[in-house]
Amino acid sequence: MQKKTPLNRQVVLEWFEQPDELLANALLRNYQFTFSKLPEQEEIQLILCSVEKAYNSKRGAWTPCQDKFLNLAVLGICLRNHVRPVELSPQYWEQISRLFRFHNWKSCRNRWLEECHKKASWTPQEDRVLKELQQFKPNKWCEIALDLMRICKTPYVRQGKQCRDRWINKLDPNIVNLPWTREEELLLFKEIEQRGKKWAEISLQVFQLKRTENTIKNRYYNLLKQAEAKMKFGRITKELKNKILVDSVINQLETSINYQPKLEQGEEYQVKNYQIHLFDFDNIDNYEEIVLISKGKLVKLNDQQ
Image (spheres, rainbow, N blue to C red):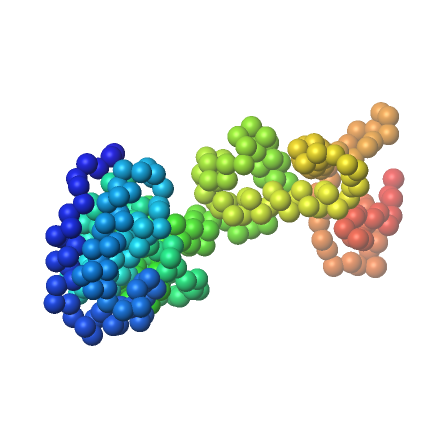
């Protein structure tokens, strides 16, 4: 929804009145703000003027002057409320977003996090807290990310998308880590033919989240690579090549699933249940059939008529 509130200069200027110098230096040193030192009134006024000139232009797109103004607003809110950027709640981000005509609080937060995001491995404490938060606030990933950083006191930023991916691909107790069956693989390829590469939808509606988005995507492309390694292609389009590979994988899976041993004409196929015994050489005549397993196949050693 379009915001019609004009830019309030006085609110921004009040954020920087009598700032805590120690806090300001710590923020500028430990977080990736675009300012090398605390901005003075003149610099703040110049940023506000540049933002006002472009206030009605480029709807939905972030401009360089908006990025600089966003840095200024985050720094000002932190100074005014004596908090770190990772501790800013949705209420604080809402205050910041009111200064932007076409950006809500999530857009402002995600934009700022893009500039200061650092990759970091997940710790056992973060995993434990994420599991607990998912129970109390299921699927509210932005709120979970904020609470996670506050509870764990992380020196880096966790985004809502990171928390979602961590839960869906690693922590969800419904995940199945067993090897893929041929039936599952065939089902995966059939669903992709109908739905397209909608990994999240297939994971939820077809596999009931037992196979994760990453798992089904990786399995799909791994099977295509295996099929491609067995073929040689000339100059064909990417679409045609992909169709040939998909058809080949589906045919192989269907053949594997529907395979039945070939029988001679008139011969009936009987399923026999064999039992494993300690072999007794003295009573060999008591056995109707003796077989051994060789290279995964049953080999008959005697044939009593």
